[in-house]
Amino acid sequence: MKTELSPAMEKRLAKLAKDAGRTPAEMLPYVMKDGFEFNEDFVRKVNEGIAEADAGKTVPHAQVMKEIEAVIQQHGRPKKAA
Image (cartoon, rainbow, N blue to C red; front, side, top):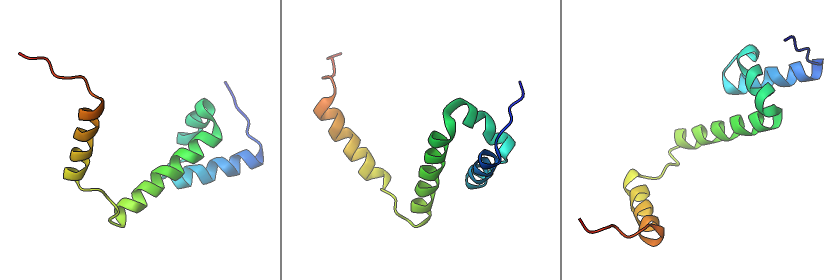
């Protein structure tokens, strides 16, 4: 199957690929499957997350585990007796 992109779509694909650290050929199947908007949003959010982690804006593992345990205690099923 041959797909022809307009010059505007080629430019958009090239920018998306650059932002994702990939080639346009590598990104094209994702765009064909999920569309430009989804992939642009996904790549933007991933890059934002990487930038936050690089800036040290992370949550310590122990804190995450404590919060997860609290959610499980509040919403989880009671454990069955052995």
